[in-house]
Structures are given as C-alpha cells and as structure tokens.
Length: 206
Length: 193
Image 1 (cartoon, rainbow over the protein chains, first blue to last red):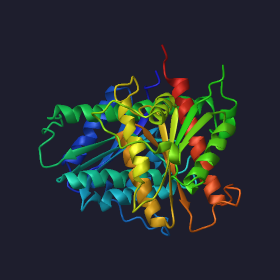
Image 2 (cartoon, rainbow over the protein chains, first blue to last red; image 1 turned 60 degrees about the vertical axis):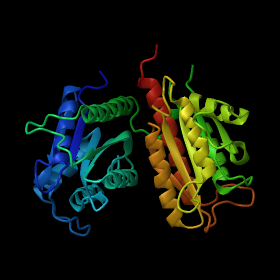
Image 3 (cartoon, rainbow over the protein chains, first blue to last red; image 1 turned 120 degrees about the vertical axis):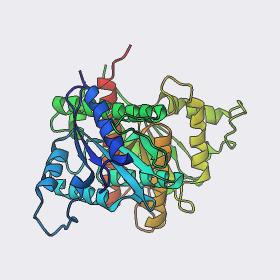
C-alpha cells in the first residue's frame, strides 16, 4: 500500500544517448514501475540544458519540465557517468537548476530520497563519482539511499533491449529501487498524516 | 505507549570536554526535547584495542558500545578532523560495528546516522564529513541530509560548554529533528511482528 503511486523522477545519462548510465537509469525506472511507482525519466541528450545562470530567469521548456517534476516528486534517482573522477558537467548543470526550488515549501530535495548510480571505467572513479553525488545530495537537503550503485562501464552491462546482463548488478539496482520506493512511500504517509512537517508536530506524535 | 526513539552518540577525543563531545551533549539535549532517549560514548570510553576480526574477545566498554548501537534507532558520529579525515579512535570504534553483521538489522541498516565533524578550519571539516558519510553508507545506513561542522577557529562554545554560535545551534537542531523524524517514520510505517 505504502509503495504504490510514488512519483519518482530519474535523471541521468550523457550527451550520447543509450550508454551504460542511461541504460541503468531506464532499467531502474522499469523496476520502480514494477514496484507500483510512477517513474518519469529525463535522460541523455534531452537533459543537455543551457548552463544554469542564476541571474537569468529564462528557462527552456525542458528545464521547466524537469524543475516541475522535481518539485512534485516523492523520490529521485540520479545516474551520472564519472568524468575525471566526478559527476559530469551536464548532470551537475541539471542539478544546479534545483536552485529554482530554493523558495519552495519543501526547498530543494527536502524530505526526498535520492538514489545514486555512477558508471565509470576505473574503480577509482567509481568511488569518487558516488561520493561527489552524495555530497551534492546532502547540500540539496535530500536523503541519499544507503546503497549507491557503481557500474564498471568497461564491461557491457545491458543488452540492446535494456536487459541487465549481470545478475549482481541487477540485484543492486533492484535494492536501490526498493530503498527509494520504501522511503518515498513512508514519507508520503507521514506528510499526509502531519502537514506541515515540523518538529512541533512530532512532539504530539502517537 | 508513546514511542521514544533511542539515539546513541559516539565521538570526541581523549581530552574531556572536546568540541565534538560538547556538540554531542548539546545534540543529546535537543533530541530529548523532541521526545527521544539518548546515550553517548565519548573520548576515553572509546579507547578499545584495535578491532581484530579473528579475535572474539571484547573489552567490556566495547561490548557496551556495540550493544547500544545494536539497540539504537538513530546514531550520531562526531569526529575531529585529523589530517583531513576522522580520527583513528573513532574509526576503530566504528570498526566494531562488524559485530553487528549477523544481526536481524545488520550493521546500521534501517537507521538514520548524523555526522558531526570538528576542526580548526573548514577544509578538514569538509573532507571529514564526506569520509564519515562514506562509512555510514558502507554500514547500510541513511546519513541525514544535515551534517554539522564545528569550526573551532571561531567562537562556538562559551566557558560552560554551551553552544553559542547561532549557525551551529541551528545545524544541531536541524540534525536532531532529522534523526528523530526518521526514527518515528520508520517506527510508524514499518510492520512489526
């Protein structure tokens, strides 16, 4: 019951569509759909937004769609390739648009779970890309899932239809999807029970 | 009966009244105001032998800390930044979480973990916080969105050890809220046998 209907926004990939990160993201979206969630994917070239310029209020339709989806969602998944040991500039730029959520009642990613996926060609970059993503999530006030999934991009991990070829990886992505769905479901129940969620409300809990 | 989450804190240095210990005590009072129980293990209480996976002997103090962590609904780790990361004392205490590997809730799973980093300057604080969070992930837990920085190059505490820096007070308050909120959320919406 708690798991149904959670709106999960998935963002990731690279300017070249259909590579490992994007496939992992779409595979995760499929799992979330199977778990009763409502995934919405923004991936690959479509999220190649103009560089975020704080003093410029103009937004492309896609930038507006992404920000609106983030504003209304219950959970988020971000998948980035590891470029020079950290997330790509394209992904970071999309995340910079979260600044448009600064004045929301739930600012930035407040109260939302964020699952993280990193794909890189070296073990060293796998560790550091996940760590960088987590630092960004903390700065945006979100809750990074316990599990972050690191994918070795040297080994083909998905077939042309998006099926995962590595059982251990499929299992990790399933666990990630579960952690996102579980938190999102519980948080939604909580928000419904106590609105707005502030410490004073918790004093009266139960 | 009203649910009172149990919050455990570990941290500090071997020097009594270290900044991270003072921050932990302040946080304890904050979570208590939010309806939680709390207990902290600080400084010399954490002077255990280096963790040896193949040796089942445990010092009584180590056993007490591991038992508390096993029972906790939320954990706080407060470490000074030594050479850009947590101290060996704190990491060794965390290594004892290996004793929770076979639990029904293995390691720290299902729990929110708050991280506090202290240091004489921002750089080591930032890297220490990031390192602490990495350990929290490795232990299967949920690091809170808020991580608290105690920069002792500024005035943070008064002579009695009270936190007087308004930013630090606000951060510790937010951390306390997030820890208690997460524990209550898990408790209220997790089916129990």
